[in-house]
Length: 253
Ligand code: PGA
Image 1 (tube, rainbow, N blue to C red):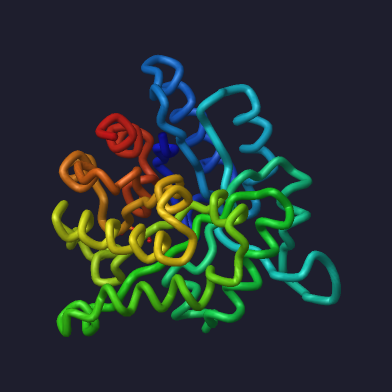
Image 2 (cartoon, rainbow, N blue to C red; image 1 turned 90 degrees about the vertical axis):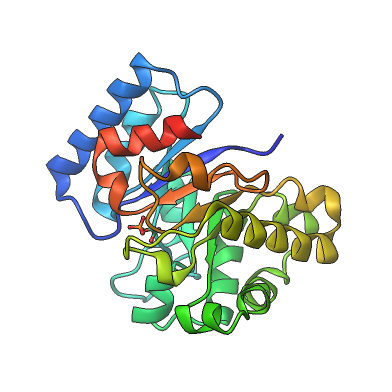
């Protein structure tokens, strides 16, 4: 059985104290109503990670993610954070290749391939993001586009590493726009991603990789979006900044 995961991507939101308060609220709700087998992941800004990691060590189902890291393990890279540094404070997941990083920070496929490897080298789990822009969806090339993203940044990995991955399918036209993919659109793309993995690494490995949906997931649409058999959870932006909304999404998985 694949992991079922709901991950909250706070992006560049929440100062220090409000961030810790949000995690306290999430933990309180989790203790009142067990999230069952679902793994709940919080991807906060770097400033919170060490503290959240301490908090998460007290609860079984809560995990900590960084939103980015540098591909080198140490050195003269002013302002950057490495995968070994994240490992040293107990971080477990690292989001790699979010569309905002690809767009605003010009992260290339090649750079993302190196980052994925750096994360795996520390036994951390990459949450690798892929997804097409609106123009690609309108020309019905989303399958080809996303397959290329996977080939370019993941297919240098050996099969054992691929088993460790989490993939997040996030159509760019749905991120922060209030437009969500329908459950049929999400399922179609998740199945296509799994098929592409299977062609490269075999069905058994492809079936082990959790594929999360991201893009305007809310309490009102989460159950519908998560209903497809290849949809193993969600990567949640805006709605993860409020504990009640985030936990309602966890519940709908
Ligand atoms: P959103 O963001 O839920 O605010 O659309 C999702 C994401 O970017 O991961």
